[in-house]
Image (cartoon, rainbow, N blue to C red):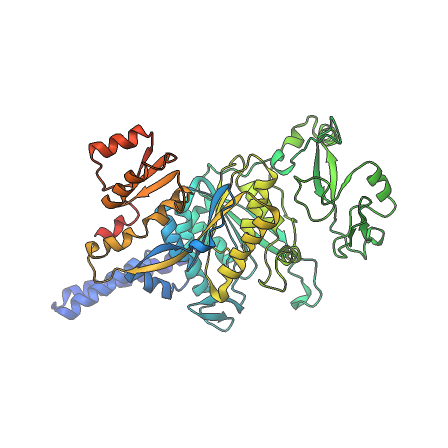
Length: 560
């Protein structure tokens, strides 16, 4: 029979506290005895508190102090608006805790997938806490990181839809702590899995002679309604083209995990016979074909080169596989074609490596503008398995970094005509990363690939509310409602002659006057406290303009 030693010690201490209380209660009472009894009650409460889980010293950040006396608002950098059709996406510059608090007003329970790649807290100037880098000698290195991430994950959970999930990249430094923290916030019953992701090939100059080549991707569901069961058609997208009539086909990576030393016959420069363009081999990931087998693959048209098909956005040669062959293999293996139509998510994940993330960024920028970006194909894979059957999914990344999540999502939309996924990215602007890297990357990707996608750029600002009554700053907050309505509804008001917004009686008068020269308006967002007169209501009804009442919850909590 097992014995709970900790429980015995706790009960013994509680018994001693009871004896002390009885002794104090029997003595003459004054202010000191009253304080002592209060202290004993606090001790008892702590003794009866948490019995298992993550324990750390909680810290407050500078942003916590700011949010105590200010409320965050959004302002738009209108000169940075990218208008290229398609869905409206959003990039928010500022402290991501403030951004999350704003998103809680507009997107509570509405986010389908959250992916984040937070600082790993290696103690090598990779995690800054209140303007100071945390180093390994800091006695609170883990507590500060956990305090930092906990505040953000608590809000992140509120943002997720019941069918949603969060994917978190992490390495060995905080993986164990993060797992316990997420068990607490999301419930260990909602732990969906931990994907090991191979980030590099083995190194030799490592401590203890063990190369840490994997990072981890923790997955937590909001509830049991989330399902990452992956329909194979999302992974295996088949195409039908006139040059190969009657046979559907898909593409696949033409490289392997083998090195040039392991497979020297696959380490060669692949040449496109149509135009002579050369594709040098990656010595750490050679071609899946050999020099000897290459002619046969070319003859059977099993290798696709960039430019062969306009709808394929590829930058290196790919292997072609045919659906009938896939189905034949599935029948042989499982007895039916179900094996080709559906599968569960497979572990470990070996989609892309860190060097490929660097290469992705290198195609858009000269020089190293961001350290160790995640590869686009990895994030694309995670979005696909995290938003199965959600073609209009909304994806949030509040540690946006270089903007890989945006590029991955745009690529998914371009490769799947039914996909209308949107993103919201949040990052600070330290060293101008948000403007010069994140925004610039999205802009260049849209221009380079001519993606049908638009982007609005917001900055977090703050309105002081300390020592002021609500009515003293309510009009000031009204100036920032437009941005929240745009953010919540994925729309753009600037220059839009089909959708309007009215927040004051004066603006309503102006809008009614505009209708004399503009017959394109279809929808009007109307402030909740504006009352139209009968004539105004009749004019809007006659023009068949849909009225959407703007909710009053954006700053409701400040009314006191």
